[in-house]
Image (cartoon, rainbow, N blue to C red):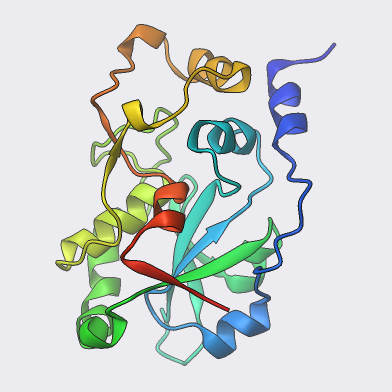
Length: 206
């Protein structure tokens, strides 16, 4: 029997190779603490997210040097918020690097404060309803809030009205995730991986 989950998963697998995708070695060589990683992730919710945002990207994290040993790792919100090796992150899908246009101006702030700002979010569960509260959190929300906590805006916020919620896969995900789909308010705040992809405050690093 075909389940809702299997249908979502089948629709989620990206079929287009990203020519701007970076390797783990690229990230260690070119990446800096605080760089944002956006990813074409292979997960059950990836397809609906791509449909709603009209983007190929469905996941995000950021780089940190947790042990202060020069080795970059990835902080991500997947339930719980955690730190993982770069190699584990990129094996899930094609990944691009985004960096603040004004990175050099903010470098000291980022290197000294970003990791401390992350501490209060570590271990938080994943927000499957994509809300904007602080008791649960999703991937791109984490990126935005950690930067916001140190006084930096990585991307303008969006609302659900900015998304395309009409597609079949999107509607199916809404029904699975929300007890009552009418609870979804178009004025509610959201920050998606696509917002990071398109942000005028960020540049691609290849």
